[in-house]
Length: 469
Image (cartoon, rainbow, N blue to C red; front, top):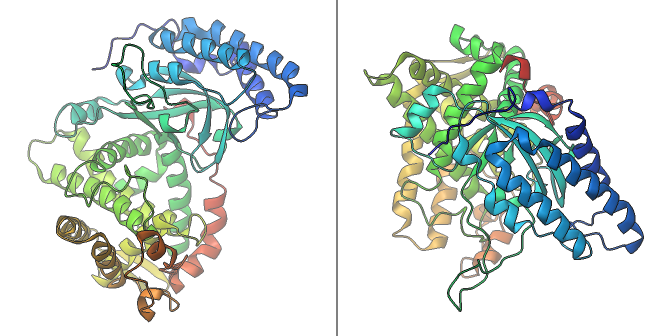
């Protein structure tokens, strides 16, 4: 349940130029200069300067606590964890207590500000557990609140908007996950004797919808120009209006995020840290995206859907397809790029079902036919998952490869094609034999990448215009 919040300011935007926030940023950057990748500061010669930076960090946080009454306990615990880290000689930091008290999922009210300070890595950015600070606010439109309180419950989902941040987030990272924070497993106080040490329960996951929307608009605008794709007026509005795009991504992410734990799952591959062929992760991400797509189609076709939800449901269709066929295939390297495979698969499926056409160097899409064809791909993936519980793991892996190969040709050097995959080997040995670029880019994407690649690269660190929010 979201709590009622009484703000002492108009929100976190008041604090972007606040001297204490600037002090926090400066202190974090200073500490980063001393920290090893695990977050510790081993060299005693750096301890004096680190102590000064940590004092400045603590003072900055303490001064801003009154601006975040809903996060007071957590911020007080951050200060205590900082002091404990110093007292322990700047070893590997342990922010178990403060992480346990941070609950942004309990304050899902539009515009709710948060000050996030932890030693942590930033996904898609760095694996270094450095001190980072983020000033952000919750995005929680009324229509999303209605969806979440109805058929699309997702108590862990926290959509966010960047206001300001330290350098760790000047990257492609658009998530804030508690799993990234430096903590040491422990037995909670009051637990029965014999209780094993464990990490704190993770009860939330943050996604920066403003970054997702901003890079989507930048990349897709250029892709539309390159491919000469003629857009419907509402699709054009999605590219022109940041706020509209931002809210659309919140709706997409709400349904996508909850789907990872729903459906006929092979055995929830993201929760069990096991090695597996990278293309399986691509199918899982695509399954969740296409579930968001098909749910948007259902909302569009339902007579009782309210006008605002109906508008954003229609926009979700464009957002899923455009992001998947333009940005995802060309983002990142060709080494086990599972998101790229998912985007390539959707593009090729649409093309082979004659919904997408590349004729006379112009891209066209049959907008009326698109929804049912995309849902058909969703059906194929869902059937693969449904059959999985009757299959050995390796058979499921092979079946998934076969599904993709029906649409995307594997690399000519693929061990699947040559029959040299060690089917009697361990899962790790089989995974080692999957080609780094098992499903290479098509000629279309090779050509598109030369023109669109620089635009995609330039979106690192992009955020939306706060003034429009």
